[in-house]
Length: 331
Image (tube, rainbow, N blue to C red; front, side, top):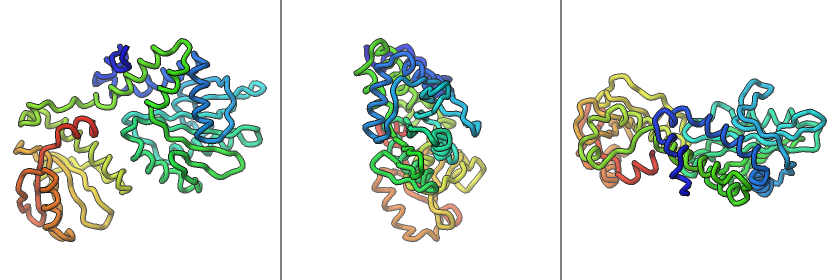
């Protein structure tokens, strides 16, 4: 059975599941870890090999673990020592959802408090699709900088009396390791992997060839959502502060837009025109932008196929999304 041709994978391709399914996925992951000790041991062996933290096997795995600061962790693996649950593994699993402010840093601090004075260290795993690994790496580095974390590849070591390390791991790798060792959960893991893969692009249906050729006018709300997501990812990849989505009216981009750039400097505004003139995507920048004319030249070389025009003190230029990249990398 293909890992994407599953019942759960089909359900995950629905809009409802895409918006609400991350909790279902993490609950399913906790179920498999608790049910199949061989699969759980294989994942732990991978975490130990990556982190160097000695994690005991035979953990109790529970979803939605409530911590002492009232925060919730998607999956908690606890070692039971004299009827005391020691949270040695935290798993925060993401598909589309963003990390909260200082979310992983709080997990680290919780483990340091709860494991202090014990013989155990802690591991915090951030589980994301492969396509989010690069951007999430930058987010984790910024999140953990205030506690002096040192990064080596996809592992961050946090200084302190209690050893705690953060590992960034792809869904596919984690499930593949578990599947190879699974005793009775291979089908369950196929379901989870199929759902995780389907959810990466199912909350907004991919643009069809006809829509890319002009039919996108019937998908104006989806186009705005796509621009919102693309500009969010681009901002984070560049390490900039995320500007709010602007739904209000603005010269040439009344369909909604977001600024991308450094605060206090000229920015690009990437958005949607309201008048359904092709193409659907537009970029605007101010005439005071350094090398004003060079911006248009570079955008033109990147297959933005409409000549720019002046809008008051700004320049507007548009283009259609590259078909394969728009479907695969964005969605």
